[in-house]
Length: 205
Image 1 (spheres, rainbow, N blue to C red):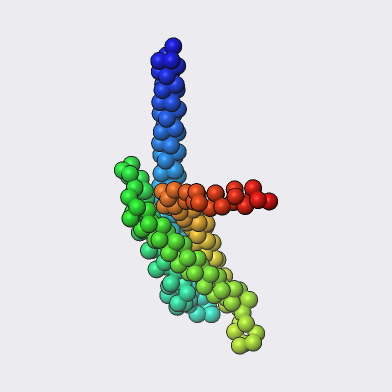
Image 2 (cartoon, one colour):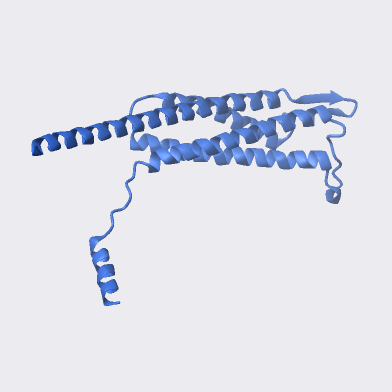
């Protein structure tokens, strides 16, 4: 009778363990797919922002202007190029079904954070330039340029908006990479001596 209960208990424990492994595998697989898709989407957006800005120039009666005339926009182009290349390579790495090593998890975490902040910086600096182009600065007698180069400003705005969408995507990617990294660490074990001290103190009270 005891052997029967022992066998049933062992089978139940084995079934529960197997179910937990299956659930963990499915969760890991779903996270890997989401991570890969986010990186591929970011790559496409970076390429789009890059192309829009690269082709951004305008010539009219007031003169001519191109993205290369402004350092902030050149910086934005370079950052989007780096973003596109990194997004593709990291998507390939993220799509691999092989178990992730600790060094790989740390590398992706660090690079994801770095790219997020660099892309945010490029978008922020370009936004400041666009603000001045649309509104000017009366203190330094800098007139608004977008009244004369509206097409140029519109394309620049589109590229900057796409860049901020990339920042949002990489914010989610950074959350996933941080979860993959720090999820490997187990929670700290309680100190038995401290528990005994707390119990003894409670008893005296």
